View 1: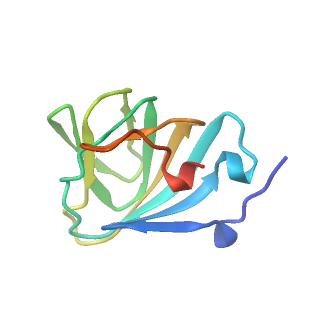
View 2 (view 1 turned 135 degrees about the vertical axis):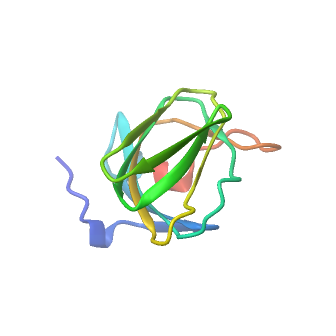
Length: 125
């Protein structure tokens, strides 16, 4: 058994988002990765990308605007979003407060960004 204390978990920052790595192979996970996202207020939903495995997001606080396969969805605390593999999606936060989410992806799941080779995000390594 491995315990990852949130206060000690590594953080990664990309534009408009901070990812806190929770469960990942480098932290003892063998099958499932999990991380916490903070999406700043006003974050655009123009970060369209895909993953090669199913990814699940659970909104803990605030709200996000998700676009999945060109269909928009408003999500608030308590809502979950299941993104199928190889489906274009983006998350943004048009609301007045940061949004907190937990994301879950199988170990080895790769992000697919336009013009880039597929890669495992650092918070999932």
